[in-house]
Image 1 (cartoon, helix red, strand yellow):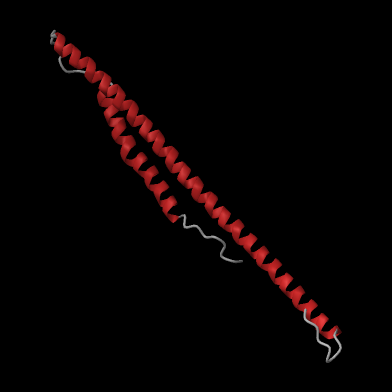
Image 2 (tube, rainbow, N blue to C red):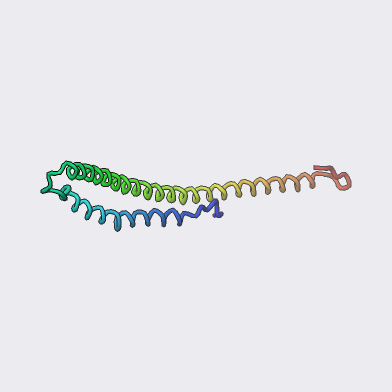
Length: 136
């Protein structure tokens, strides 16, 4: 079988594995710890009746909520990207095999056509009487 196109997919596979690993071994555990810490709500200023402290707690709680949503979306996007990279690598690997097979078929068809042309040329040369050569 010929070599075909041969796209190097090692980088895509490595990228996919690294993103999946970073997400599951680094981001998720850190996020889980933070979620536990922030899950109890905003605790500062509990005994303070100041309107400013209450407003700061409200802004802080909103910031934590938005940050949490951002981390969740980031992890989801990382998983989608890692899965897509793995799927692209697999598709490219499969297309390499198909292109190699197709290249072999084309090479075989060209070789058969060249052989047929050679046989016709030889037959034509034999059919010409000696001394009366024709251009073919």
